Image 1 (cartoon, rainbow, N blue to C red):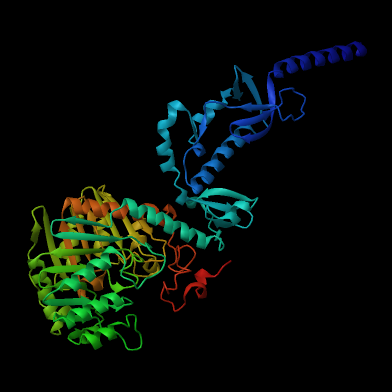
Image 2 (cartoon, one colour; image 1 turned 45 degrees about the vertical axis):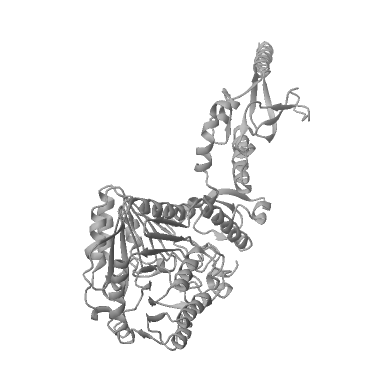
Length: 570
């Protein structure tokens, strides 16, 4: 009986095995994935690899077949291969009507339904996919060393332990690769040049011209007068016939501007100027001494300096007809495109008159709280434009003008700022956010680590704040609201800016100008990785592109480039 039972069991086993073999006869093991569209399978079902056993996927195209940048090709090639390997590795596939199936699904459909492949019917999705996977948002991450590399870093690519990772998913204990940082800097400069070709450097509307200087448009500060902002200033100096009055916070490494001023004086132009007082032991703007020697008709706020206020204006008045002003100091960092700035040239005798009244007070020794209000009224230099010219501290610009604009905002508020500490603005922005206004702020890295900054409080309230990650500074002090209002000036959004310093702010009501400034803001916003909405890079570190190679003490700690702790290689 026992013998019969064993025989029956054996027969049953053979029957089941035969059924399984027959069931599996149409399934083939995947030997290897040469590419997402070329798969080696065990056609002979003998578990012996054969070079001729390749299955080709037809009528499907990878994103990398398009004309992409080197970084895009590397990024998408990684995702294409990852998708194929994760889908097919160590699996059995079925063939039917020259189609390959995995787990009951057509492999071709799996590819087409992903972001990384398309066919003739799904070509339209490609542009959206390229926007979705921005190369600036991805890094090479070495799992073993915990170092991250730029997508262009050969050292990062050569490692066997890397994966591509979104910046927002970067582990907190990761470290930057010192080797690829300089290459990354060069790449970013290249990208900036491309952006500059698509974003106008200036816009003219009637008697107003706005100049935009993008952050790190140049790799290092430059003492040459080579861009449109500096050339515009020099041209006005060279063309002045009767008078030039100017108020500047500082002047340094701009010999062409100095020489043009001296030449203007020599041809009979009356030149007067005022500047901030500098401590004799600390000279951030040593070329002020050259002005004092060659243009002796000046005054400084020596007395006011004792009250901790600064003469922070940056404006020129030409022949009592034109005004050049904005956030740019007359320096090799601000007039060259190393720092980001807005500047405006206004062709208006009334505007010149308003600035002249302010200048005369300072020239005659009245600075800061000692000045009298000018009681200026809004002016219309063009039919479709109204501008309001304001001065600190007498006009209380934040309280009386900026807060009402923020409180009445309905659609969006975009603000590129060097420093923001004012609690009135904090509360007004949070209220605007709570009523549905889209708010985006770009903050400078230098000041993001100050104990006075309010940008972290804004983030806690759900407001998007990015800290720039470039060697140059986000030196703008502007607000753009609802495609209608925009501001340009010298005043940081601080208590001192409103209540102590000598400053000027121009509020422009013009749709074309507001939309132009919005486009330049968004260009800067989009090139700063999303990572910096929650992480504040140090001004002199490998996180701030170019800051370890620019010859500048970016964080004012007395150490430059590799001497700084943030720039020492790991």
